[in-house]
Image (cartoon, rainbow, N blue to C red; front, side, top):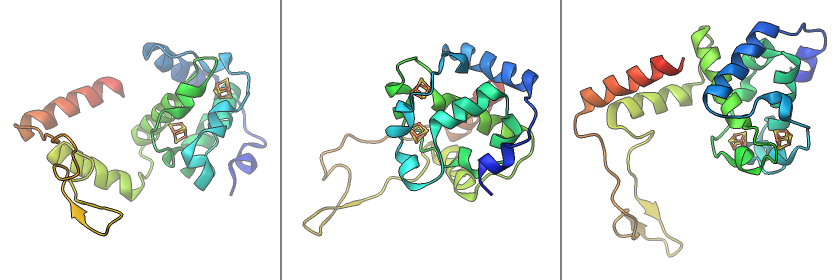
Length: 175
Ligand code: SF4
Ligand code: SF4
């Protein structure tokens, strides 16, 4: 079902909208009221080209207070966190951070997290990276390591237990 069908008769969730905008202000982002729906964010969104995600609609839905509809939609999980929408916005609104906030709220309310996110989280907690360092294929059909490809070394946490503790502390502060 599309999100527009879900929202057709919904009531505005005023308290939740206020809470999300306050979280954005803590991140020093402009609140959704500043959005004038130019859709410049969506025109550059990489996920929009593949899936249903349209960042300008996310901001519009937040302005209308339709929070549950977004939290219950798969749409919030298709963002690739490239931050292009934030970079492109002439009003300094950051749809990407609205999406992070919605994802945090979805997790806090016990919603099912897509499997890929769980795998990335487990990897990040285990080795400090969302996936382990890999070799890359070249156009010539060779396989190269980061060093062979001329990339700088990629470090991992020296003390995984301390790293995990730090991540948990930061995560609890942000929820
Ligand atoms: S680019 Fe900014 S102002 Fe334009 S629709 Fe997106 S969030 Fe709103
Ligand atoms: S951060 Fe997410 S919503 Fe923003 S442009 Fe990138 S993929 Fe699209």
